[in-house]
Image (cartoon, rainbow, N blue to C red; front, side):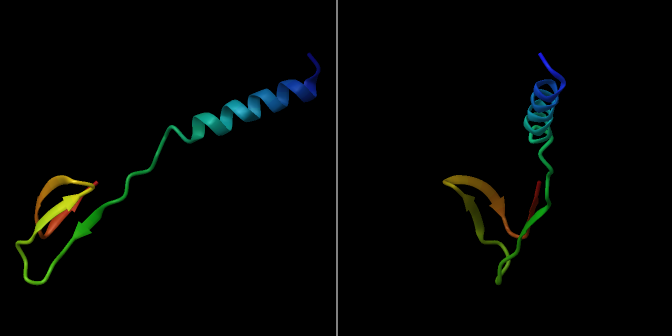
Amino acid sequence: MNNKNKMLIIGGIGMILSGCGAKQYLITYNTNPMGASVVCQGIYKGYSPLYEY
């Protein structure tokens, strides 16, 4: 296997593995008036205001 093929394989593996460390973001559910039920994709999450990662 030549160096060019090795570099392509290593680069491909690096790109695949870099997607595994997904970043988390803080999401705030805030309503007016406060106290509304928060449902996301059919799953009950709680009452607002709600802070979730």
